Length: 38
Image (cartoon, rainbow, N blue to C red; front, top):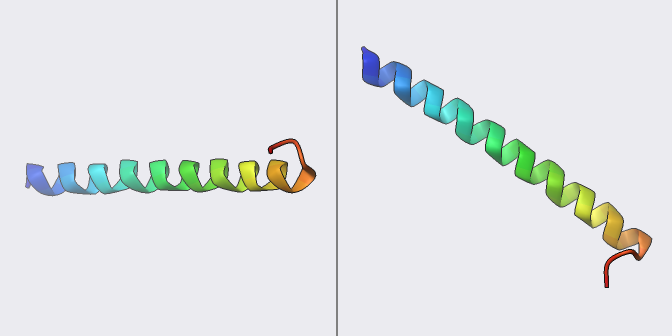
């Protein structure tokens, strides 16, 4: 089933994107705590 493969691939990409976003948010939070962000 090709659509099954595509769906799993898409889910994988989505998960990776979400993780990256989370990491960025955490980084920004840390920066803000340090006072580099207004």
